[in-house]
Image 1 (cartoon, one colour):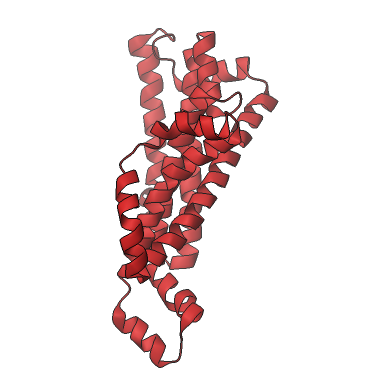
Image 2 (image 1 turned 120 degrees about the vertical axis):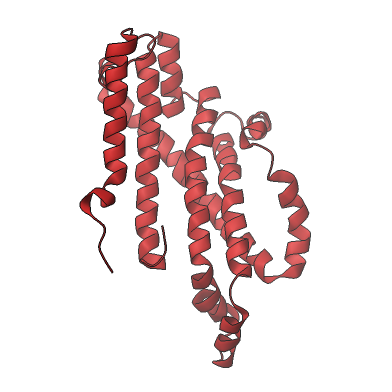
Length: 254
């Protein structure tokens, strides 16, 4: 198989550099006014002039900790319940109405209820991010499990692979490409959902950083927070994709 060229392998990084260069040029040559559209360098300067390094690191660590915790909880629940529905008609009949009822509701619509139930602390944020991440993983696990070829399961049973062994050795590996696709979608949603929750009820985190820029009248600080969220989300997705390639194999388009 022909290996991709260097440009193809780094197309994403090249695209980001081009975007930042165009943005910087537009900010300086077209708008001129940083209060309307600060460029990347101006946003970076505003952030470092306003935020002590320790505070910025704390905001990053706080948001990433919430994302990881909520994402892992939702992923575990989504994989277990999704595979259960994929293997059991009874479980599918019981859970399907609830899933179809709750799936279209935006996670942020639950925020007032989450605050009443869990307060404005970590519990409400984990609840909201869990709702946002659960449904893509659940749907992907359900689909992947139902698409496992019956012949593959029959062959495993003919070799006396049953019960938990059938689940771990046959069904889960066969469904893993679909599950990974759901996990990547859920991870991206986790960033958006959590940061939106932080905009409303948080003292620390990237959402709080964006709101701080608005309150101080520094658009550059807010834009810095927005770009930082995108960068962290991109890095997290690449990290998850790298882990997935080891688990699923390079034949999968991840």
